[in-house]
Length: 216
Image 1 (cartoon, rainbow, N blue to C red):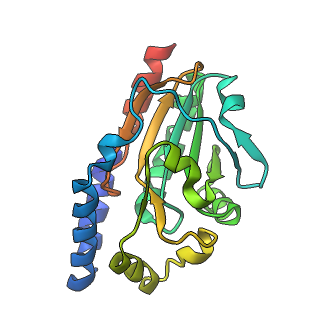
Image 2: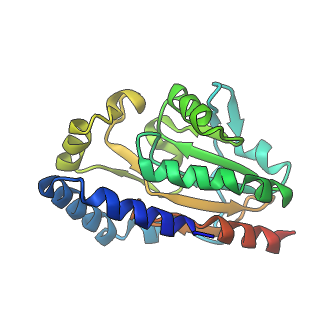
């Protein structure tokens, strides 16, 4: 069975050939600067208490971490938005493993800075059985140490590519979260963390399931 990151790498290699050299250079430079900043190493890690939040789901109804933890562990994954093809691949992979996650008593929740309407379209398009929450302004991502601002030249590239982050992020077009996934136990402690500055790399669902097995 192909792993998620193998699928992402295949997609990256194919897409890379289609991107003009000038744009590719801007993307690579911004990615290297973000990696060099060390932000991924400063994000919340294992042993920390997960910051509490209450965020609107795709339907607009708020969901609070406190309420989710009352039922068992939470798998909390941060993604950039429905405009990001790597996020879509990762979310589809999580959906394929959703039954295995819930069978272990855990609740899967995805968070992005986009508005609820965008989350709803995403959930319907991919037939997601888990909640996708809207962290407009990235306040929750900031609490987890994940929020960063796009450099000017990369923000301009995203505009040129038609991502329209001004609209989908409700006036917060520059701020995105690092891709991250946390396994949080019922006491609110982070028991496993995946944080990476490279948006083409994501947490493997098999690793998430293995961690959940240790919590049973």
